[in-house]
Image 1 (tube, rainbow, N blue to C red):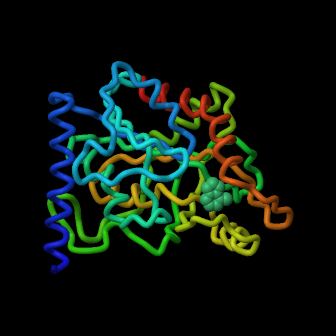
Image 2: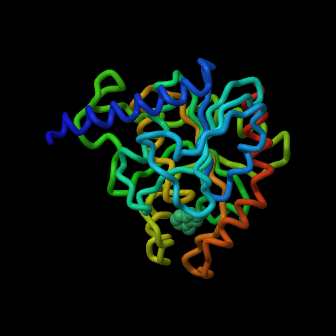
Length: 279
Ligand code: HPA
């Protein structure tokens, strides 16, 4: 099979998933899509009058296996918008192809979504960050060794060489920082470094990430941001700092602790996102 054949098959899968969702939601046109990060699924409970579809009911859509990810799509109202909420995302460390990881973003774009917002759990590289703080993404560094645009380009979806000079919407970022200040929520903007995982980093790796200019590190979000840029969507990313990555004083950390901190910080995140979508 040529690269072009492979991409034509992928395009058909994306279009089939989009039309399956469209049939279920009866032509409601979502404006914003959200992908919720590890342990950050509670925001989905805020969706009003949701239609919920398990990923397993969407032929051609990957299924979610990571801890803290349920694998359900919710469509309904959040704030003043009709939203698609993907509760559960796909990661490189699970063995998914970058094209699978991009599938929610591609499907959202086919359904006419203009805004894309993702949340994630991340390690705090910038030592000014505290557990449970929020980092509003301003930029990223892709260290995953993978890219969701690898393969033949689908020109109808976006350009072969997309511009990445402003990968995250500055207007939404500024607004989120204002909301955080009004709500007295600890938040700043910064740089997300994406690694493949699944292991957390060594002290030398955390030192390297700080030298590279990263404020936080995680295992997601960047594939979605690259596809959002390709599709011309407005992208917003919010990290919850779930562990502190001080190379000189590194404490062992487990995924249970990461999910626990994510769960504790979640109400702040929910408040910020709901307020943003009300405007
Ligand atoms: N490193 C990578 N990914 C993560 C981390 C981390 O320290 N914390 C949460 N996700």
